Image (cartoon, rainbow, N blue to C red; front, side, top):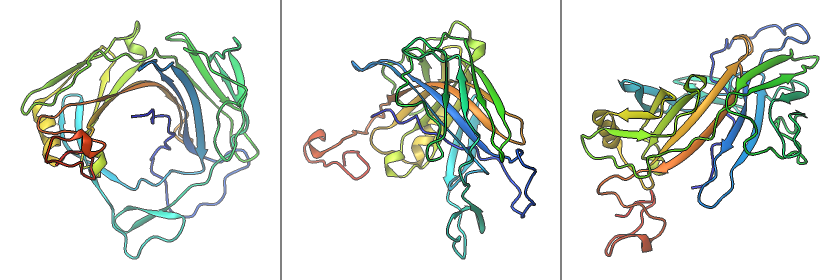
Length: 310
């Protein structure tokens, strides 16, 4: 499974849908994120770091509504619901709730973004980024060091602003690369699961999100999201894991661990700086055999469309 978590998401904050008069020059509101991800070395691959950012002139439509089914301590089971709109939404908009359409936003140019506190392989700790096709990332001539900062180091992104977008500054703390200690994770019926990772020197500077998705190849039936302090250990209860399994499973079930440090601008222009390190672990479910082809399955079974033998 390749590294897929360097994907920029835009925040789903609510926004008035009634038409508003344009704001004053230099005060256009937007929302989005700048994500700096550290990928630890593994499987004989070197580590890496990368930055991707985007700001839009409004919220991005959420095509799936995630509803809470149960909560156990730091963990929540969420089930998806697909909204239905009749008549269907017009072009350049999406159905975000039953009979509610929302327009897709446009990329917002917030000017040159100066990055401070992130080291390059040339030893520099300051560089700039300008938007290309609406996205911000370092120029091809800039390679980030591994690691690009010390744990707890101050990282600042400053947008200069444009005639139609106000300037802003985002500051967060650097995090260490995440190292998961739980090499084999099995979801036994009725049994809790304890997962462990190496805690940072300063646990108060970051949080950890653990996501469990065991049906994504067949169309996700549900997922568990746990948000926990970065103490190095988390217990997921047997009942909430059983509820997730009861919704359905597919091949290659997984658990994703993400250490995160965040900051955001004022609510009227919700832009985030997200510094994170993620590790993906496949989990075992008794009775489930994952596959990529028929050759991976026991005699008499074939590899199904959802990548499990059947």
